[in-house]
Image (cartoon, rainbow, N blue to C red; front, side):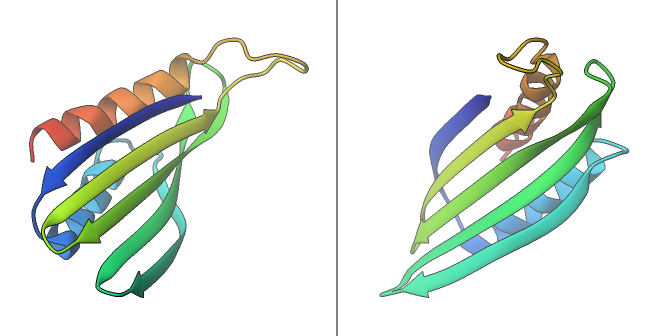
Amino acid sequence: MAKFECELQGDFDQTLEYLHKGILEGSMSASYEDESYCQRAGVRCCVRVYERYSMAGGNRLSMTLTLVGDGEKLFLSAITSGGSQALFFKINTWGEAAFLDTFRELVQRL
C-alpha cells in the first residue's frame, strides 16, 4: 500500500475531471471502476476507485481517490493497493508505487 495526500486550492469539479482524465490517460490499462459522492452543509466528497494492470506484479492493482471540497479548499487523498503475489505478507509492491508516482506527477502539474 502506498499513500499520497495534499491540500489544494481550486474548483472541485474541474479538479476532479482533470484527475479523472489524467489517471485514465496515464496508463493504457487504467479503468474507472466506481464512485461514491455526497454533499453535506456545503462540503463535497467524492471517492473513486481506479484499476490498472501492473507489469511488475503480473496482476491488477487499485487506487482509491478521495477528494473533499469546502468551497475552494480541497483535500486530496490517493491510496493504492494490490499488486502483491504473496500469501501472508506483501512483496513486490513496485506496481503500487508506480501507480501513485504517476498520480503524484499529475497533481504537481495542477
